[in-house]
Image (cartoon, rainbow, N blue to C red; front, side, top):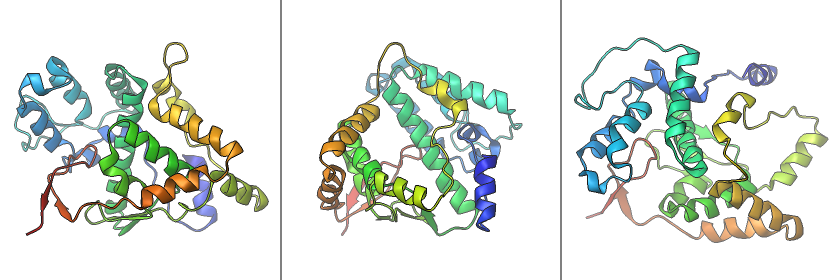
Length: 264
């Protein structure tokens, strides 16, 4: 993170840093961003829960401050956890996830939640993401494969108003990752690896198991070597998909998915 801070300072940008385990800090949990998810899941009959009897245990790991035995709206003060305690809590949560795909998905939920909350706290009306056309193409295929096609307009569009109070934009969506890599090298820009070595343990599995997103990544990048237009074609095809003329409400605070009702 310090490296990113120095790069931002070099361009005169104000830097706001946050780590994935900070999702368990009281300052992030004060918004009770996961409380609604807890109330919804614990209210369902056990035969409707995929995680069945493990629901309370799993939720206690997901929700930074809330207790599944108390009201979802009850406000309680909790001491700030140490870095080691937060990492251990995250580790325990990921150990409950039985597949690599589940681990990657919940980490992505946490990352998105932190970015959105950080943008709002900094009073930013726009959140800019650096997703390339290659990355977006992988997201399109991967999200469809895991049954989240409904979120494609939010997850892959150039401009998204899905999140209330914070517009999400992807200005590099039309650029392939190879093009961006070439641009950075020609301009001698300093690069930062996406995944921190300190979180490598989150993706460790037995044998050669891979997540759906990793398989999709290998598929798209493999095709792209011989057919450079692969990513662009996938993106252009998905761009034709538009959300229904409906109002989205009751969004899940974890994945931002939700039900809709038609406009009257």
